[in-house]
Length: 176
Image (cartoon, rainbow, N blue to C red):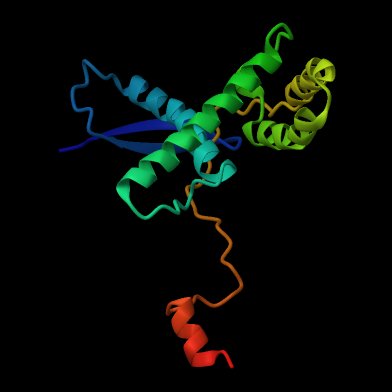
């Protein structure tokens, strides 16, 4: 059983009638406007999933057993949390909303500063770290309330044919 909720939303400057389908059946516990607002909050959660999957390369898991897959996911989540902590530190005291900082840009800046943080003398590290935080805080995403984006896959396919046998079998069949 599902519940249909109709709402008129402003999408890309146009007013559109949108239908929401929900399993939240009780209209007294979940008024129609709350269901519509839940949808708007869902976008933030989708962006968090995107940070893990796309920006940190976790859209394809490479491990083959359940234990290794759990470790791989835990490592990705730890990386997300570290990047988010650095992003939060970058806006502290600057009067910037942490939500407006680009996750993808923060990852790029951290990777860009990593070699310097690894090889410079210890006494220079605080200045380099502060420069990294300043750079992360400087790149803000525009405020886009109520945006609606299509859920579509945009993954580029590799331009090589897929190997349909083991490499050993290929060498036996085709290598001279």
